[in-house]
Image 1 (cartoon, rainbow, N blue to C red):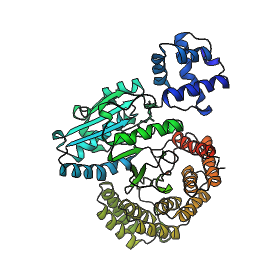
Image 2: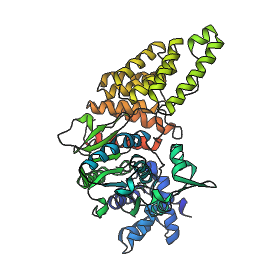
Image 3: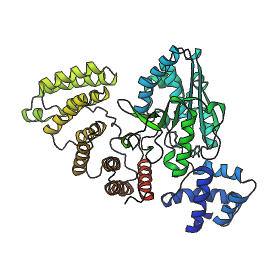
Image 4: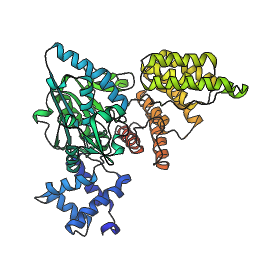
Length: 490
Ligand SMILES: C[S@@+](CC[C@H](N)C(=O)[O-])C[C@H]1O[C@@H](n2cnc3c(N)ncnc32)[C@H](O)[C@@H]1O
């Protein structure tokens, strides 16, 4: 076993350069254990005794391509699941696809072309396929082409097989799960109707041409949670190619922590109630449109909590009645009957003017309906009632940022940190705000704060975003720190 070997700094640097050249993947010292475990496995196979021998093999051997593929299968991070970044998928279903289908129907162009680049084991392109089937019941009369590609051959084979486990489908709405999967023991087998809409190919985004017919003239490109692993030159090349492969009104979906800041200004942000997607830009874009974005937190309504007034007056009867009303409101909310939910929450508030959860739920609904001013007013009211309610400060910060009130947003994120200094997204968002204001010293400080905190709490869930892993935020912070430093702005 080679695990006792030391990887010297010089040899690690050689590997770093080679991997950037061959895959765009940037490894730093944080990932060295993961990296060495993969290399050790390959060295064992070939009976190499030193890291340098193995490096020389993958750098100079005539068969290096085959060995590199083996190595890529081991060193890529394939974390994915159905309905990842739910707000983006909901924007796709509620706005982007319906609008696209309307335009295409009008111009008698019954084709939809989508590329899920770096799709891992297929959860993403299959989520897109299901979205199309839901939005376009006559999809069989259309020419639908969804391509999924990935550098990892094991992932592509798994994608073609389309058998998933509980963790993969956990975030998928139950109606879609029941409609499109068959359960066998602990496995979930995807229906042929969904599988038939997607084709898969192995493709390396960093080194291979984007010339396959299925990669041309695209309506949508999904390339989520990939460029955070790339060095900046590869990211620029990849995004530039996407620009040319997209139609003039095409959209580019990136991951939550990925942005085009310091990458290109050829795209602008297209905003939807809870998410944003990049779109080809027609005019020069402002900084605000390409810097990292703060997403609206996903808020799940909790059970009926006790409130100040009821605790003080100890009224048990009204509590039961209010609890029942609250239950009703949550059901309406979960069934997306938002107007009904709003009026049930109104009834609760009429009886209990301190019912913060009801105000908060109303603020969430209003924000999702793009009624930002009303949502901001409700959140301000909540903070008047309970100035230490951290969720309200965070949410208010997000909405003020969205409203371009960066000073106001900054103040709210600072309050979040004052109340709970462990909330990593508050530092990250402050970093993004300072970046936007070109206040690079402060941005560096906040990203570093986030990095330090993540170093301490790697395995803790990230409050305010279920979909973001500590690894994603860590990489996003480090990428931004590096870009700021590369520019000499510190
Ligand atoms: C974290 S997964 C993201 C999967 C999916 N897009 C999502 O957001 O759920 C990153 C994927 O990028 C792939 N990848 C890394 N480098 C790549 C490259 N140079 N070309 C193509 N795919 C690559 C990995 O194999 C991995 O499956």
